Each structure stands twice: as C-alpha cells, then as structure tokens.
Image 1: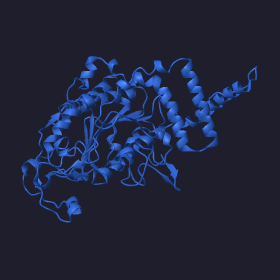
Image 2: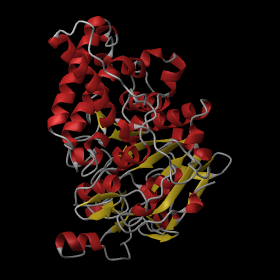
Image 3: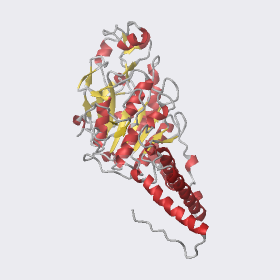
Image 4: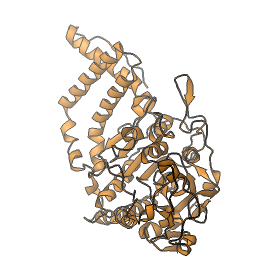
Length: 470
C-alpha cells in the first residue's frame, strides 16, 4: 500500500484541517483493519480456487439415491439382522426393525455407468462428472450435533465453520464482496454457528443472504448503485471512515469493533458491486430454464444455485446453498413418509444438475469444487415398521464434482444393507481435510491460537484421502 502523507491546508482553518486529517487517518486505519481480507498464499499447490456446498439438510437416504443395495430388495419386509444401537441409545431397548427396499429404481448412468436412482434423473445425466463417496461416517445421531459437526468439526463446542476457516486461510478474491456467503440458512440445528467464525476474527464469519423457506430477496438488492454515487455519497464515506478511525483508536485490538467497521465498509462497496451480481434478469431464458427457474417446483432452489454460480464467478471463495427449513425435522428428514423424498428431489434435482452443466460450459468447474450432501444418511430398515427411515451417521453418501476430483468415480462401500461404512471409510474429519487440501490448505497447518492451544477444523484427527483426486 502506498504511504499516505497528510499536510495541513494552505488556509489552516482548524475544523477543515481536522476533517481532512481524520479522513486520512481513517483510510489508514481501515486499510489496516481489512488487510487480512486479502488473498493469502496457500500451503499446497491448489487444485481449486473456490467451493459451492449444496447442503441437503435432514439427511438424504443413500440407499434410495446413490448407493444401490440389491439385498434390500431380496430381504424386503424381513427382520433386520443386526441390533440397532441408535434405538437402544434412545429407548433402552432394541425393537425389531424390518428391512425396507429402495423406493426408486437404480440404473447405470453416463459412460462411466455410475449408478444413480430415478429419484435424481437430472443429476444422473451428470454422472460422468461425479465423484461419489459411499463410505462417509460422522459424529452425532441427532440433527443438531451432526449438522454442527458437518459445518464446524465439533458436535458441541463452539468452533469456526468451514467457510470461516477458508476465508481466514485464503482470503477473498474480490474486496467488494464477502469471501463467504450462506444462502438461505436455517435458524435451527446450530443456526448461526453453522456459518459463524467462533474465536476466529469476526470478519471471517459468513454473510447471510435470505433465510430458510424464504425466496432470495433479489428485488430488494436492485438500484442501489445509483443511490450511492456522487458527492454526497463520497462525503458520507469520508465521514464514516473518520468516525470508524476515531472508535478504533480508543479501542485498539477490539476484534468485534474491527469486524463491525470492516462489515460497514464492505456493505458500502457492495452497494455498488452486488446489484449486478444479484440481478438474475441478466441471464438468458435458456440459462434460467437450465436451473428450473420457470415457475415450477425448482424455482426457489434454482435461484439459489444460479446466484451461487454468479457469486463464485464474481470472486466469492465459498458459497453455501442451503436446502432446509426452520423446523425440528428439516427437509429430507422422512421418518414416517419416505415417498416425500420425491417432493424434495423435484425441488433440487434440476437446479443442481443445471449448476454443474453451467459451471462446466463456462470453464468454471475445473477450479470449482461442488460438494453435495447432508449431515448423515438414513437407515436401510423402516422406522417403527412404518414407511420412513431413521437417521444413519454410520455409513452414507456425499458426492463431489470439479476441483480436481475424480469424475465418474465411486469411492468406498457400505455393507450389504447400506448400514455401515466398511470399505475405504472416510470420516467427516477426513472429508474436511481433503476439501482443504484441494483448495491448497494443509489442515494441520491451518490453525488459530485460542485459550492456550492451537485449534483447527479437524481438531487432532483427519487425513487427506488422496484417492479422491484425479
């Protein structure tokens, strides 16, 4: 940054001189406060520059989507042959459970022949771009702990979210936009902690756009640029800088104040930059249709996915696209009505496939990671002999695309019933470590000193699963 020299004016009117010097010092102070937002050097050669996380809250059934199990068809209705430890933990007893077949037919898709069920026909057409991890397992059997573990690497302790760690480790690619954006997050199951910064500097917390169940407020972000131009706007920015510098000078080292000041400055810059990014009307009718933005069931999530592409294109490092709601049983949590999975698939299948296709044709998929998945999967047996499935953190599926990951590939396996991960197991800490590595960050070196020890996203565990990379 060039050195700034401040000299008194020729006519040394005291108020005018103080106003000028205050604004000058304000610029210096604010530059210092926002210096840690600049892009940082990675630890490793990065395979990707950015990531989009498509969070399917509630837990998609792996045995109905990406992990076919013929044994379920053969044993449909029979008593499940293993004791259910989750039922024991909840009730103190192990009631009989009945095997439940997959409700959707599986078929090989694409040239790779990767199996995808009829639940996701559009995603199935993109099978050759998917790296499917069938052997994921995690911590937490309830939505709250498991969702926190997915986002923060801890079930109870207050820890920074993945997006905050990425913003802390890599910084932003566009000073006029946040480095981490969460689209329509839920207030439940961890709420703001899932996009929070915890003990990291508050400036790294996620910027929230919208909330669960409510369409992204595109119209409210229009026409801001013209309202923030001209001499009056410049004077307002100078005054704000002066006031912020005065506050910072009497409260040095106050991270919350620094975050407030930085957020205010970012908001001012976003008033000019954000309207163009959020204006989906700039897209062609063909692109809107690709995302399912046509008034049908995929309209709302399609807008989120298209906005995620536009944010990444504009330099946002990490975008989380939430498919959730604010209830205690979020979205995909079908304990008593598995056929309802079809409702959520109709809302998300076309937008997700459209996002992959759009990134690919624009040359963005090569250095963008797309991660699809929920906090856990579902059991291969019917819950309480009904038509739903219970939570299953012991073995479930997520998939990755782009960003140097193997395409048209399946990694790991669950047992014959799809209940436990048994082959080439991947723990959630391992997945976090692998995602960080793909972005050039060594999870053992991405640390922050707090309360007397160095903390990291993967705590004292995690390994990079190199076999997922091409």
